[in-house]
Amino acid sequence: MLRGEITTAIRRALMQELAAVGYGRLSIEAVARRAGVSKTAIYRRWSSKLDLVLEVVATAAGGRLPALDTGSLRGDLALLFQVVAHALRHPLASQIIPDLLAEAARNPTIAETLQRVLRARQQEVAGRLISRAVQRGELPAATDPEAAVDLIVGPLYWRLAIARTPVTDSYLETLVESVALGLGVQDALPRQREAPLTG
Image (cartoon, rainbow, N blue to C red; front, side, top):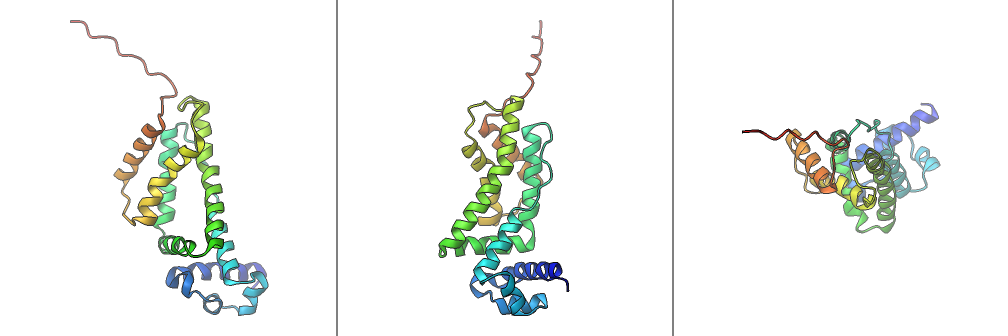
């Protein structure tokens, strides 16, 4: 295998092994065996199991999202929720995320890295949604971006990663409307008032 292929194989094997056994029972030997490489190949790239896990998880969390600009905040929220729900439903993610959260409670380094990487990602993605909505006049300029980001990412993450409850299309539709109302979304263009009925 070429150097790039080896690194890709190790990352893939790490995610599969992490999903199968969890961080506590994860070993470099098992990752190497699953990747079809030597332990030395792993240690040349990462100095420890912790470094390997943190780098791979940070890379996965920072993956590119499609452009979320549908022309309205409700449309952006609907697309974002669909993308996030799809990602968190993935068998690897659904096993790895709860395990890493549990490990983070015991390991400050994992906790700090997860917090930094995930928070930066949330701020980048949801922050753009909020700033565009403010520019379109859907949200007031005084909207607190930090609270808005928490309101956007919190419910879906809680349902999929913590409560482990299935997400349906109707739930996502309800969530879009609930978050939009919670943020105080105004229609970007004022609606025409209906003419009063004359009797």
